[in-house]
Amino acid sequence: MEVKSKQKKKINPKSKSPYSRLWDAEMRKIVQEIQSGLLSIRSACFKYGLCRNTLKLFISKFSISNFGGKFPTQFVCKMNDDQKNAALSKKIQELTKHLEFAKLKIVGLETMIKVAEEDMQIKIRKKRGTKQLKE
Image (tube, rainbow, N blue to C red; front, side, top):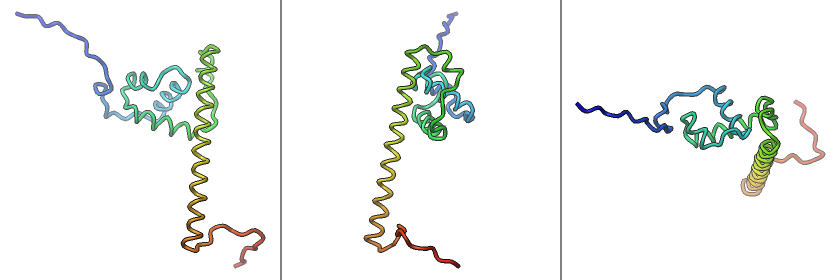
């Protein structure tokens, strides 16, 4: 009789039940670990068995909902000065990215209003000094 040696399977996102749904609280915890600098996106994907695009979607979802939120104190106290500086610079880059996105959105909306007013003769902007109608 031959004895087969048991080899350890390599863990990857596909072998960790990819169809199980994580709750929002669990996803918030994962996103906080990534944003605080304790985990990278790739290592979080392997640790929790998530797809990278799904994880990035949740990161953007929770970072927009907590726009301007502070770092949790439980993660900040575990970091040294270099890690804190890296986390703060990452937060600055993220906020700068959100600001640029908001500016692009404003420019797009203003362009849309301008085109609608010129091409379709729709008056959208209210002129200054006009009074509202009383009904």
